[in-house]
Image 1 (cartoon, rainbow, N blue to C red):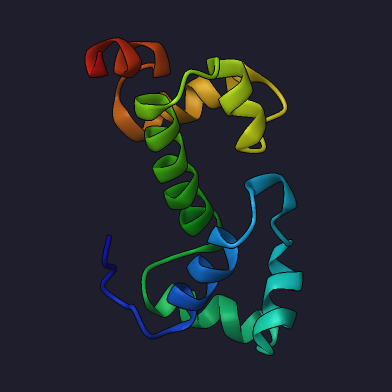
Image 2 (cartoon, rainbow, N blue to C red):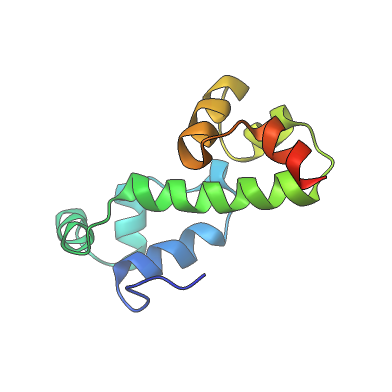
Length: 111
């Protein structure tokens, strides 16, 4: 997937986050330090591009969730845990917000 701002800080954040599983993702401040950008400057640059930290994290989690649900035999609860959700119900709510359907409905439709 290509994004509108492939060369800026958002692209650097996406690359950084994709390198690790979601439970190991750094905090916003740690990510800014890794990019050697002050947190306030990183926040300002992301806002200028119409993005935010949570938007980028959600985009990546959504991509990972869709891939796991369509090509994986793990349970929805296991996928939720692998994506960093403490409770499967939180994953269900987020997934429904992203796609308009439940993880189980997507999985059944993919079969």
